[in-house]
Image (cartoon, rainbow, N blue to C red; front, side):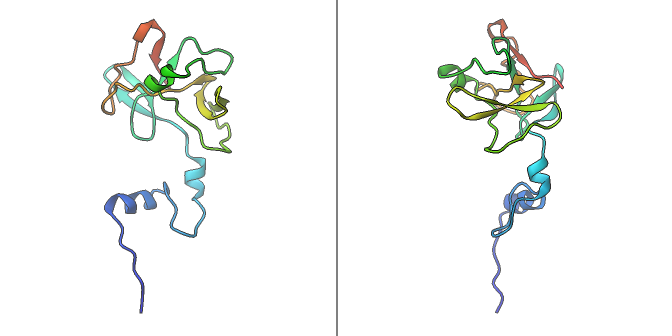
Length: 137
């Protein structure tokens, strides 16, 4: 007798794209080597986005490859977190946050989402307090 596992459509797609691994298997090389951000489109042109298509931002007060956005700032501007063991690739590097967690950076600038963006393509965080800007490829 064979044993079958039921998958939801989303689970099947994620498995096919290598975003998750079947039980008992190591993650695919594709998933391990995937870039932390991709290029998306906004009304203002190309922007970097996270895996969900949400716009990424940079903060003018970040310097020296270090995030200056912690506490309430990080609640409003969630960092693009890097998994343990993440390694630099191309223009992407990993910075250590004040709490010891890891965050992705693009060309040395830490990357963030904006809590008030509601859907892919939104860029409502661009220009906030004249210190937040969309991350451009």
